[in-house]
Length: 334
View 1 (cartoon, rainbow, N blue to C red):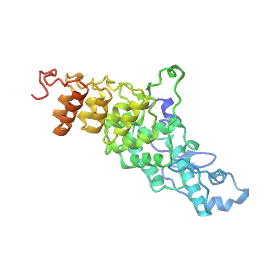
View 2: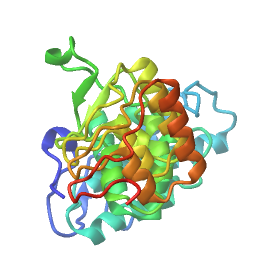
View 3: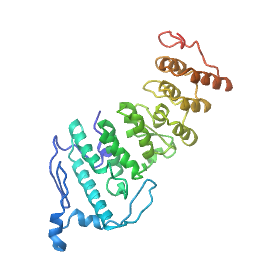
View 4: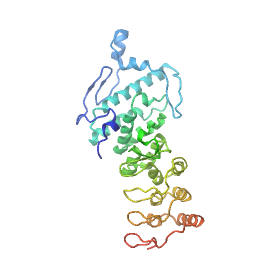
């Protein structure tokens, strides 16, 4: 897996092969992050500026799952928020010195991040005030690639904060917004299939929740394709078809698979039915010469689903080609 470019990575850069101390005017960060407010208390008003003082100037707005504000209710809650927000800033600085291609550094970073965010469920921060969009894109991709429970917890934390991706359509694409070249964490989850990848994809779609555009990676895999292959994502498939102006027969060039191929191969009956009722061609063959009917037999999809597909084809006057041969000369019932 190649390292994301500077535009994708934002301020997160490969600097060294080991964690190093990072000096800052505001905070002192090392690979072992600890919080000690004794120095801040002893300095008093005449002491040097520090992260605690800076954080206390925060305007008091918080974000929950619905993105609405909430007031600070007591001093204890403000202190807890200040502590966690400072820690998040510390981890951001620490992230600038992680070699993301070294697995143990990647795992260590997300373990530290997990300890901070796993129980943080109220008075959640506005992540845009701490990270840039490119930095969050990069962290979400790395959370997927890490294939760790800590990475999953970070994704869930981002969802809890109410953060939504707001990607500006490039000037050159403003008149063709339905398909945009942009690799996201959703593509990486579908390609790498980390532990519990389908739950991860569903969480990521809460972040990358635009259906008027269909992001495609460098090999033609799109968000729409991923929705079609993911369990219990039929509502997302429907949204893409209704709002995104996507082609129900959009081919994944790498394999020649159509969305219907993907849904049938992964045994996503509900998505397959939605696709067929919206014009998906049940007789398209992929690069191996396999039709969706070949796929349904090979994947072991239940007989009721196959009968449903036949019934839909009959209703739409588009009969299934039961004798279609793949590249090896096999028919679906061979």
